[in-house]
Length: 311
Image 1: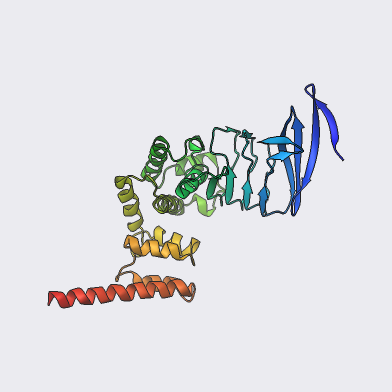
Image 2 (image 1 turned 45 degrees about the vertical axis):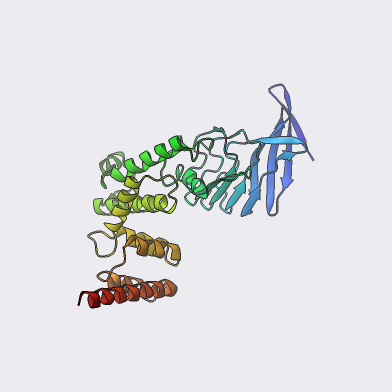
């Protein structure tokens, strides 16, 4: 049954709508509807365009806060804005669809949504898939919410701003922020995070993730930045003084073939480091081991062919 209360001179109606594994809560005021809450265990949600004929134009403050099961959500085409912390701490949220136009955005909308990798245009317009990944990176990997402007995403100016942020992040010293962290007491004394070596390793891993993201989704990428990012990754493959490129691929993408193919095309697998990579993999990731072994066999055949040609 609907509940009615007065708010600021308007009649506000509270409605609920069942989903496959939960319930959405709406407020209807001034002939528009807002999502104000959700309870349930849906992995995928499509927010309706209307509720009882009223257009859904707003996602309210903390509406989906800490929703652990949510993986994908499609927001309505008439959306005008999203309130503070609406999707904060949705750790499994990986895909959001919303209209690529100017939206009013609250603070911390996607705070700590560590899995968020795609933000798509829900209006069904033809789009460059790379842009969906890059837009998501502005609130994740790149931590640059000022670039979260769906209406501009993919434009020449937007890409220039995105890549300027990438270059700035890559240029930071690996120990940048360490002293401030200690002074502010942001980490527990004696924890691993207070070790400068470990801190610098994690910063290098962040750079590896960022470089791979941009090279994987290279729409509009300048040649000079492409070379810089590729060079950074090659400077941290197996056999180098630090091996974060290899560690990120092995430990975070263990059975994802596209990352191993990327590494071989980059030139990060050589006759000198191949055996050490095999030892790191041990008996794990059998298909990826087989792929690298085939690639290495091909390298040896090429080397033999060149040797015979020289003779």
